[in-house]
Image (cartoon, rainbow, N blue to C red; front, top):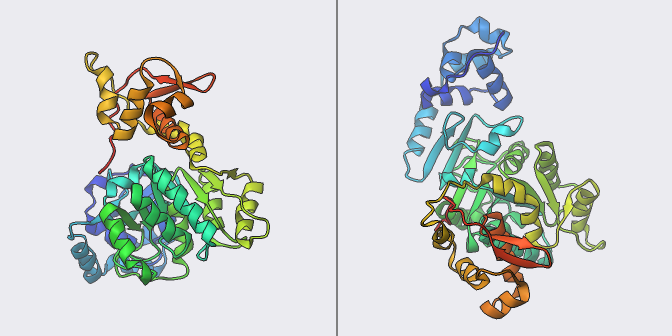
Length: 386
C-alpha cells in the first residue's frame, strides 16, 4: 500500500485518544497506520478488512469501533487542569529531538512548562543506591550544567535520578520522564520533588493518566530520557542496570554518551568503566560536556541580525548579571584568566565556566595563548528563564 500524505491537523484530540488507547496500538503500529492512512481520523473511518490487512488483531479493531468514551472523557477532564497538557505528534510543542528516534510516542501527557521539552537537555542517570561520593558528583554536575542553561532530564527514580533533579532545580530547570501516568508519582517518596518539578520544570509520560507502574513501562521510558536529550551522562552504575540500557539506547539514537570514572574497587563504577571501554566519553568536569556538545548547542541558538546602532549593547542587555560583569571586565583588548580573576575577584573555575558558555553563545572568542576577547556582537533571541 502506498504511503498516504499525513493530514493530522483535521484529527480531533478525541480521535488521537481513541487510536492510541486501543490495545495493540504502540508507537510502531501507529507509525505504520499513519503511513497507510494519513491521520487518526482516517484510521477510525477505514473498514475492518483494510485494518486486518495492516495486521491489526480483532480485539484492536473492536476497540477502534467502540472507543472507551469514559476513559477518553476522564483524560480530557484531567487535561483541563491549568498545568496539564496533551501533546500530539501534530502539536508544534512536540519536542523535535523525539521525532528523530525509531519509535516516538504518538502522544505525550505532561505537567508543567512544556516549552522546556524543546530546550537543549542533558540526561543524567545512574544507580538507585549511590555512594555518598557518587551522589555528590551527580549533584555537582547537575547544578553546574543546569546553571549554564541545559535542562537536566532523568527518570524520577530514587538515587541518582532524584539527586540530579533536585540539584538541577537549585540553579535551573529539570524534566522527569515517568514510567507511570502523569497524575501518579512513583516512587511515592518523590511526591514533593514532583511538585517542584511541575513548578520549575516538566513531568512527562507517554502513558495516560491513571496508568500505574508496570515493569515493562520503565525500559520504554528510558528511550524517551535519551531521545529527548543531546547526550546522556552516567555518574555511577552497576554493570547490569537500567542506566546502561539508557546509555546504549542513546548510542543507537545517535546521542552522545558520557561517563564519570571511579575507583576500580567500587562496584558502582564498573558500569561507567564498561561504557568508557565501549566508546563513551570520560568526563571529570561539567565543562567537558559543554565543550563536547558545543556544535549542537551553537546550532540551536537563533542569531537574527541586530540593528547596527544597538548591536554593541545587545549582548550585555540579555546576559545574566555575572556574565555581563565578566564581559565588562574583558574590555576591548585580549585578556587572560589571571587578569580576569584580578579584575572580577571571581575564582578561575567560575570564570572558565562562564567563558565557555559565553563563547558558545557568541559573546566572546578564545585566542591563542589562553586569552579571550569580545566577539563581534550579535543579539541572541534566547533569554534565560526565570
